[in-house]
Length: 173
View 1 (cartoon, one colour):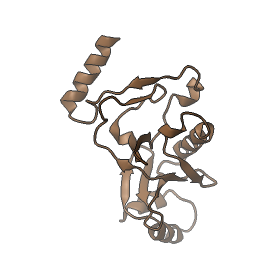
View 2 (cartoon, one colour):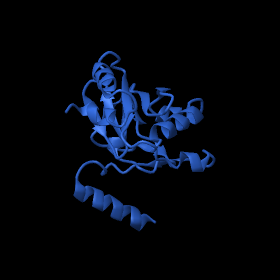
View 3 (cartoon, one colour):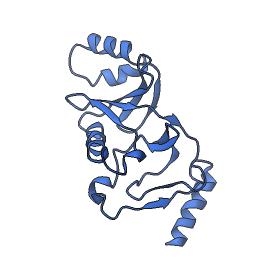
View 4 (cartoon, rainbow, N blue to C red):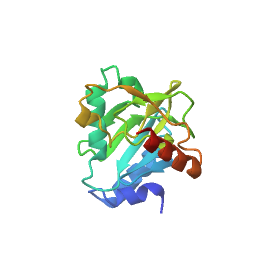
């Protein structure tokens, strides 16, 4: 079974048509999470396709709405842009980022990012941007009072470093 076939099983319509279409459009699976899988698009290398694997989770819709809210704000440079979404929200087209293994020293990010780990960020045009922001305090924070905060460079290196970074954060209060 190819990577995209699991996603196709959740889609409505003739399964052969869905699988054939996804097979034509999608390249290698780049990643996955609890609710989505991310595929390269060989015919559009500057973009990725995020496909929901859990019907009704609406993470693509949430990401799309977050992008629509911040795209013309001073915070837009911290996000990988969303380019298009399907009518049902099951498919989202986003700018592709290059993966990072760890955060550089001195990096600061807006405080509304809650799930701050290298897996959720990547490089786009030389900047570190968030490419997985469907779960974010952004909607509740309404951007008022948002500041940038330092990011631990220990995150994403070694599990012992992560435990140490969490312990340091707890001590700092």
